[in-house]
Length: 130
Image (cartoon, rainbow, N blue to C red; front, side, top):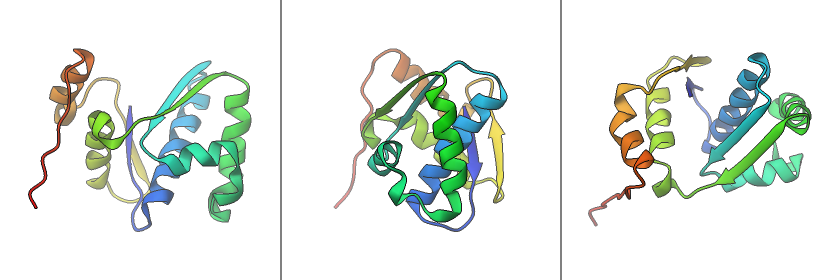
């Protein structure tokens, strides 16, 4: 698992950078299997067509697409409510300085409870006050 600080930008840029970093780390570690799960419909669409990828990221994006075509790659979209672990990792990434990332080989304490609930198949709820 990884989390990263991207500095200023928009959500789409952050989601694309997270996907790019995940694919680049998988490439550098020699992974032959990768399952990328995100709550971003735009990243899912970018995997099908790169036209919406900002030009500043397009070269890295195309390199990543070439990599995932050479391995066993699965991509899935889940709604934010079903992705509490990814949301927790994103919150950890907010605390990092720009252009840095942390690679975690074990479950970070900040998401351990959500991870256990997810592994047990328990639901995750968000309550909002209006």
